[in-house]
Picture: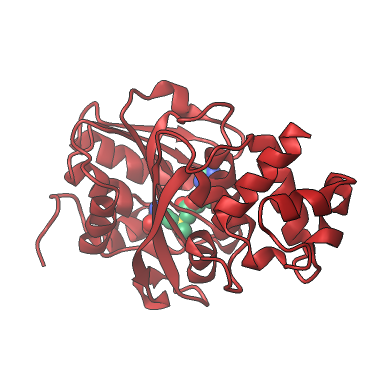
Length: 280
Ligand code: SAM
């Protein structure tokens, strides 16, 4: 195993700064720097890119991002105990790491970065999903970021890349796949983390498409998909009844049987239906 930098090993950093993992903050740390460098590489070519990292913790992934050549890393961390450890990384990479203490759900530092921008995070699962949805639904498309490289529980990662007909297919898959190329980049067993979580994890890499895969108005598509999957066991003619009195006609016109269920309808089908509703 090669050394990615000359900073102390992460176990030592954690001991020096008393960073015992806190469950309430979803702290499961990655201590293998070769692994964090590998995750950083899945984010693509970092040289010449600004990176927004959410939840750097003791800085394992941060060190990977800097060692892989990120022009600048802006890291948002909620736990103030981590700041001294992150300051040591900052000193090792002068001018390239800026740390902001705060809750990533409350602050949006994207405006402080210069394109090309890549977002990378190993976050607690609920925070990660909420941020993913926000990053996928900006006021304008294309977004300011080019790629998202995010760690999730394996089950959530599967929902992001799911295809029609599978149990995992739903709102998250449609939201992600409408405007990005989403792929499962890496699977990690619980033992990769300290302390190990209960379930496996996976890194998903999403690349923003210049424009949506199929035309549709974002607000209509989002409402449609939310209604359809809210009652995923129901036939579409009943789960979507509240969208329009003519929903059966629209479904037939775009080639979807009104008796079908949401999980059998493709992204293209949902977009066609959103356009039919818009034209009503
Ligand atoms: N990136 C580090 C790693 O890979 O070892 C730490 C990952 S740990 C799963 C999640 C990190 O996110 C913790 O450092 C935690 O304090 C931080 N965190 C949790 N909620 C946050 C929030 N709302 N905003 C910013 N950071 C948060």
